[in-house]
Structures are given as structure tokens and as C-alpha cells.
Image (cartoon, rainbow, N blue to C red):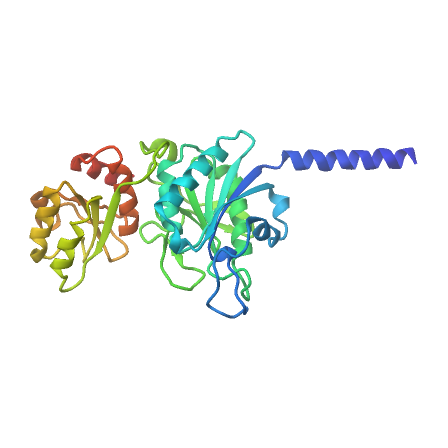
Length: 350
């Protein structure tokens, strides 16, 4: 009897020791499809952000074996409804949690529609080398063959992997690992929607097994000058999508927006802008509005001074950032400067 009690006590101590030696991952939930629910398992329509963080965690078998999971519901919404205020709130929560010495990593559940933007924003403003992984799903939690549970399991595995440290904000989707700067959604419904057109994934994660095959190329997190500490609002930056026969009257009306500080132009081809928009470009620059040339193409770099646009109108070439991410870098740059040369340097650096 004595031996049996001793054995039970030793087993309990071993279990306690194992639980306390596991890494602690803090899950910050924001809603999205991964928390979505539908009336049918085969329906393509559903209500995003229906499940709580606790319910999402409970849906993933074996997740507790990977790490001690803590969680917080930051907000719960369709990511198409995410605002700049939501970004600032999330950045503050990430900073608070990541600075806790008891927390080893963060996983953020997020809707896929704007997941790439949130990931890049955090990649630029969070000041920590601890792993931060953003994850979502393309199928609602109630769908037949839902991808959310495995995506979340793999995201936790990526977060606790020692090799994830110092890589900035990562995106883990469909067994692939992407740098937050590079990931983008490329298909409306396919589970393999996230790609990195200019660089490819930096690693894979299969059933919790992580393997990296390349490093992150651009400075991030602790190696950027950007900060949103004590920032109450971000500068207003518009995105204009070029197409044949742009209505220049519409463009002129955009310039009437008093709060407008910057414009990203999703140009045709190599960030090209029609000649008949020259008056718009001239007037915008007279108003001090900073303009970045990106491209609607989806991959590739925008060449500096293509068609003499940058030197003629004092514009900025957006390098290989897509329009939505170029907007983020321009907003953060405008927090401290409107100098075109400095912002151009930012685009070639970050």
C-alpha cells in the first residue's frame, strides 16, 4: 500500500512538472471564419466570429499536449469589418502579453480577408523577438472538413518551435509558414489561398512538425523604427485602383478629403499611371499628400521612376509590396515624417 501511494505521488509530481515545463502560448482571438458557424455543413455562407476563444481551443484535440494555453477575446468580428482602431487595440494587447516573462509566444486567430494586413502591421510595430503567429481558416468551424482546428494546432506548434524566435510575425496556413510581410490571400475560397508570390513560404508545418527552409529577408519587429505606443489614430491613406478610362472628376473629389495624408496607387503593370492624371498628381503633391506607386498585378517589384513618374511628380516606388500592404507602411511612415526620400528608403528597407 505504501509503495502504491509513493508511486501515485511520484506520477502526480511528474505530471505537474511536465505541465509546468511546457511553454505557455497566449491565444488572442479576434473572430473570423475560424470562429464562424453555419446552419449547414456544406454551406458557403456563415456568420464569422460566432465562437469564443474558449470554444475554438476546445475544438482542437491534443492542443494541450503542445503547450499551456491561455487566451483572451480581443474582439470577435468578420475581418472585413476590422478597423484601424482595432489594429491599435490588438497591438496594445500583443505588447502587454508578449512582455509578460511567463508567456513564450502568441497565436492570433483572425479572419482571412484582412489577415495579411494585420500580420504586416504587427510585424512592423511589435517590439519583441518572441514568436507571434497569425492563423485563420477558409472553412467555418461547423463546415464539413473544417480546416481551422488543424491550422490552429500547427500554429501552436510553430509558435513553440525555438527556430521561430526572431523571425517576426508569421502566418501559418494550410501546412505552410509565411513571413508576415510576404503572405497574401490569392483565392476566394480555396484552403490553399495564402501564398507569398515574390518569395514563397519560409517553412512547412505538417501535423505539428515544423521545418524551416529559409530566413526572413526584411527587418521586422525590434529592428524597425515604427511604434504605435500612445498613438490614438493612424494617418488617413487612400488606395486608388487604376483601370482603363479612370474618371478624373472622381479623383479630384478624393482630394477634398481634409484628413487625407497619403495615397497608394495600384497602378497598371509596373505601377504605371495614365498621362491624363497628371493634374491630379500635381494637385495632390501641392497639398502635401504623399503618393506611393504600387501595382494591381499581384507580384513583382515596381521599378523606381518608371516613365519618369517619380522624379516628375516626386512620388515613391512601392518596391514589391501589394497596395494594401504599401498603405500600411505609408501610414506608419507618416506618423513621423512626410519626407519622400526617407519614405522611399523605408519601402526599400521594410
